[in-house]
Every structure is written in structure tokens, then in C-alpha cells.
Length: 291
Image 1: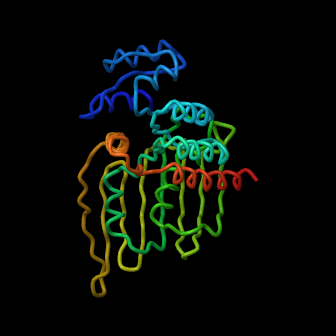
Image 2: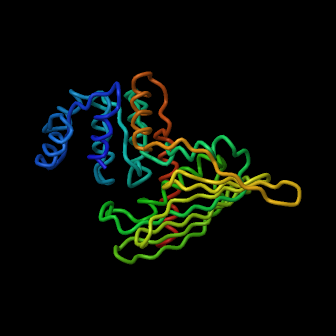
């Protein structure tokens, strides 16, 4: 993910890719050479050169790296999940507040153009169904599939429903790793909405879809294809239409939004508090799976 961030920063107008830091100096040099910038040898040197910094390190190091960079004066985009624990997430959020530095969390589906269709059309979702499947990624092996993949849908669902969670049923199965590789959670909210969420990182196919139902219509959207359909009742029949989506690269939109937040001093699209809320729910799902 760090290399992907470097690639996109090098293409965004109004942004300059200043430097790359990695614990492996050879890797830092390779990425820096590829995208026309320089490697540096420490977080301190990185913060001296850059005003806005993406952090794409193992989740266990998020608190240490993120807090250090904000203490040094940098604004931070933290890859998801925000942290491995609520305690670490809280420390990141509190450091952001104390230092006045922006902390954005990399929940990339919030920047997928299909999500705009949900935000524009939904007023009172009553049932949400999300599926996120992928082959084994050979990355993020320090966390289970809930924190690796399902957390994307958890954050989007919290954003759409905006009601307290009242109950959760969850099941998960470890296959290749010690932690769960397949998981399902059924989440009930105080306002009556129910979300059924499935994630797998050992699927032979890739799928990133969400369906959202409310009383007057439902939307079926494909994050991967950036396409979708809306269905609604008309008389005694059901009508259907394609949803118009202006396709774009979500990572480019995410990083451009981060740069805009830093440049203009406004809150990021996905705040540290929102990232922490998604983490807290994901951790509770994980706890129920392994109870």
C-alpha cells in the first residue's frame, strides 16, 4: 500500500512527493527511485521534509509511528484499521487533538464513486447486505479478515445508519491463518436497521458488493466495477434502472481529499473518531468469533 500511495501522490496536481521512509532502506530507495523522489533514514527526517504523510506500516506499529509524526508536526493519513486496539486508537485521536494535526483514516470505500449514490438516495436504510471476498492476499497477516476486509463495510455501514449498535451475532473460521479467514456478522441497530456482513480472504473470486434496502427502494452496488442498479415500486410492479457512476480511482480521491484537508484546514472525510468507532465494532465482532 505504501508504494501505491507514493504512485498516486506523484500524480496529484498541487502535491509534491517529498520523500519515502521505510524500515528497509533498500525498499525505500527502490520506491523513491521509481517515483522520482528521495529516501530518508528516519521519521524525523521525513517529517522535516513533508507536511502530509501517509502511514502504511503493520497495524501494530500505527500508534508509535502515527503519534510520533503528529508530535513532529506532520498531518497523517493512517491506513486502516486505525490501530490494533481501542487504547491505541484513542491515543492517536488524542494526539491529533492535542497537536492540532489532521488524522485521516484510510477507509477507501468512502471515496468509491458508488458510495455517493448511497449517500444521495438513502434516507432510512432498514436492511443492508455486504459481501467482500478475495483470494488470500499475502499481506495483513498480522490481523484477521474482520480487521483486514470486513472493517471497510463496517465503517461504511456506521456512516450510513448513524445509530447505536444494540446486538451482534458473529461467526468466523480460521483456514490458512490462526485468526479468522472467513467471517459473517449480523448487526442490529437501535433504529431497527439490520446489517448482514460477510468477508472472506480465501475465496477463488473477488467480490465487493453492497445492497441497501429502505421502504421506497433498494440499491445494489458493486464497488469493484463501480456500477449499480436502483429498484423501486411502481404500481404493482418493480422498476429497475442503472445507476450512473462517474468512475475514478478511489485511492486518488482519498489522497486528494487528504491533501485538501491539509491545505484548507478542514476536517478529513474519515476522521480518527470514525476510524476508532469502526475499529471498536470490528474488535467486538472478532471477540465474539473467538469467544
